[in-house]
Image 1 (cartoon, one colour):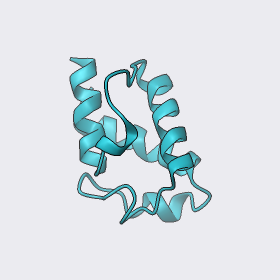
Image 2 (cartoon, rainbow, N blue to C red):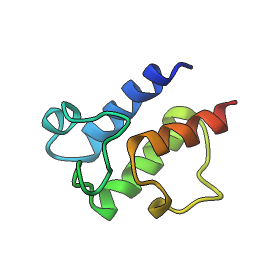
Image 3 (spheres, helix red, strand yellow):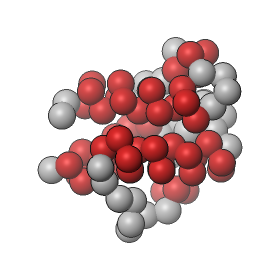
Image 4 (tube, rainbow, N blue to C red):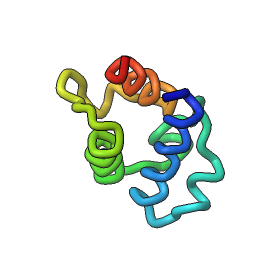
Length: 83
């Protein structure tokens, strides 16, 4: 899976995780900070983690949600799990 495919899947997850939907996704890039730029709450973050586990068939078993600062951080973790 390419980084672009991972990003597109994450955009879909984020659109479902937040009531702002497409307005939020329009701003998403690898450099987007999850809380500062995208305004994700802890509930949104938890939903994102659960949905990401399901979509990518991975487990976030060795990290906490607060360890991810940017969308790129999440993408790096997913890539590492898929490798």
